[in-house]
Image (cartoon, rainbow, N blue to C red; front, side, top):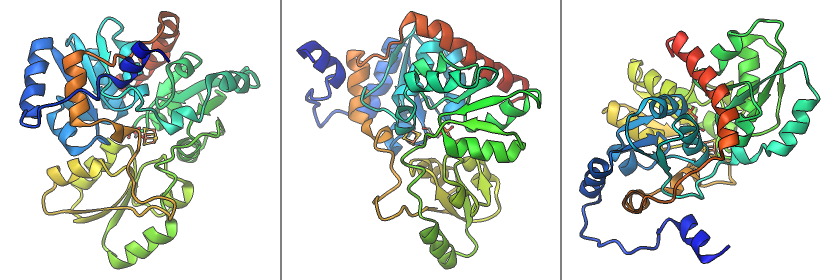
Length: 330
Ligand code: 13P
Ligand code: SF4
C-alpha cells in the first residue's frame, strides 16, 4: 500500500483536533457549507445518533439515500450501507467516517463462491439480504432487509424457487414465517451469534416481567425465547408502543440509546453474550467516532466508490426491493 492509499484508508484520522472545538457545532456548520446529510444506523454510538439528520434501520437508510437532495451523503454505518447509498445515488459523494468499518456477515459470503453456489440452482431466484457487498448485490434478483424479507418472499408466486443469502439465521426465520423452502447460504453475523440462551434464561428469572426482543439475525435457540422478533426499527417501535416497562434486548447495544431516549422510565437490558465476548457491540459499527465523522466531513474523505459496471447490475435488485416496500407501505 503506498502512502496515498494509506492516507485514503485512514481518512486523516490521525489529524490533530483542537480539544476545545465543539464538534457538534462544527459538524452542523459543515452540513450547511457542503449541503451534506448525515445518515446514521441505530448501532452507532449515541453522539453520532444525536448529530444525525436521519437515524434508522437498513431499509429506512436506503430509502433516505435514494431520495435525498443533498450533494454529500455522510454514512455513519458500515461499508455495505455506504455502498448501497452510492449505488442508489451514483452522482453524489458518499463518505464513510472509517473505511475499515466492514461487516462479518458481508465477509461470510465471498462473491466468487456465491456465484458457484448460485450456478447449482439455475431455476432459483436470488434474494440477498442488504448486508452484503455491492458485487453480491450485482449477482442478485432482489435485495431485502430484516424489515421486509418476509413480505418480499411472500410477494413471489408460491412455486418460485428461491436462494436466500447470506444470513442463515434470517433465512431460516423467513422460511419458518412464510412456510417456504429456501436454499440458504451458510453465513452469519458475529454480533448476533454471541448471545447465550442460558444467560438470557437466567436474566429472565431476575426480571420475570421483561419482554425479550430479538433481531432475526440471532440463532434459532435465541429466537425461540423472544416475545418479539424484528428489525432494529421494529424492536424500537414494539418497545415504544408496549405497555410493558422492562425489556431484554437481543441485538447490537447501540439501539438502546434511542430506546431510552424515546421511552424515559422504561428499562432496557442488553441480552448477555456468551463467555467469548464482553459486550454486544459491533466492532465494525463502532469504528466510527464523532471525531472521525467530523474529519471525514471536513476533508471529504474517505469516499466510498463502486465501479460503474457493478452499479449498473446492483441497482436493479435494490430498486426492486424499494418498489415492493413502497407498494406494501413498508
Ligand atoms: P437492520 O438495520 O435491518 O435491523 O439490520 C441490523 C444490522 O445488522 C445492520 O448491520
Ligand atoms: Fe455486520 Fe453484524 Fe455488525 Fe450488522 S451487527 S454490521 S450484520 S457484523
